[in-house]
Image (tube, rainbow, N blue to C red; front, side, top):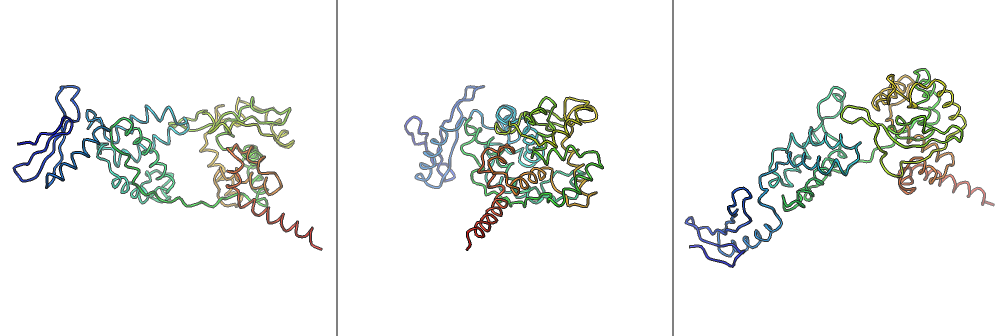
Amino acid sequence: MAKKRANGDGNIRKRKDGRWEGRYVVGRDPDTGKMITKNVLGKTQAEVKEKLREAIENSKQLDYTKEGKYTVGQWMDEWFEAYAKVKVRPSSHQTYKGYIENHIKPNIGDIPIEKLTSLQLQKFYRRLLTEGRVPRIESENQPKGLSAKTVRNINQVISSAMDMAVKHKLILSNPTDGCELPKVEHKEMHTIHAEQLGAFLREAKESGVYELYYLDLATGLRRGELLGLKWEDVDLAHGVIHVRRQVYRIDGEVKEVPLKTKNAYRNISISKDTVEMLQEMEKHRISEYVFPSPSGGPISPDSVLNMLHRVLKRAGLPAVRFHDLRHTFATLALQNGVDIKTVSGMLGHFSAGFTLDTYAHVTTAAQKEAANTMGSVLSV
């Protein structure tokens, strides 16, 4: 016979198999109105009593009427549509959706959300590091595993969705909290050296893309910002470029999207040579965009990267990322005496401290040179 306990405390009984069982009510089925009960088992009455107390306490933080309603994949879709699309920049939507469709759903999407464990996630992340890359023609020569940074990004997406699941009382705790994440190795910054710029720009001119790469090296614009420039943003009379938008590929379509941060909205002064180059370009403008595609719309970010690699190869120079043109601008500016705050503002960084950390190798060299100079001046 079950041992009666106070209302809300559940009840305990000894089963025929010799084990003790504690049963407790967690709510009512919204469709049938019947009570939803749960149980715990143990070898002794004392063990079950403690388990029952803990289970009842935990049940206050869960909505059992939603139990079994979502798999991990279903909840990720729900979270993406209801929350991520509202809070995340449009330029990140495709990245998030790619993580969900290409990695999360195929691997752990069928697991009921309340049964997802830290161990399952840990095994999932390990698998991504060794064989997570989605097979594509353009990546057939790349490693089969994803980078540590990408795995950490995927974890962040899952963590955000699981935090929301906790708030909705679908799960008791976030399973990502118990995961050990791979460390991101610092990638060495690559730039086009000053002595290489002549060969690079000559080849760019031969290839008909001189103005595009020259302007980027002269301003340090991000790729999307450069391609999003319109003639209305260019004040040739005062030698200023107003950075107001960027171009990004979203769901296979090249679109205008807002800039990354409020600091990215900025005005950049340009040199007399750059003004003259843009004046000559404006005489032959065919679009509202400074660098239009053949159809008059914005250029695909992928195409200018592919062209960069072709130009570098023809010039006999090592391959760099498009973003490394931005690093080249910053490095050369700092090496030639432009102060860190000015460079930070031109790059659209949120603080000069971030710029200082990013280009510490450049500023350290400059400090050593300054120290040597002062040593020479002060020596007697």
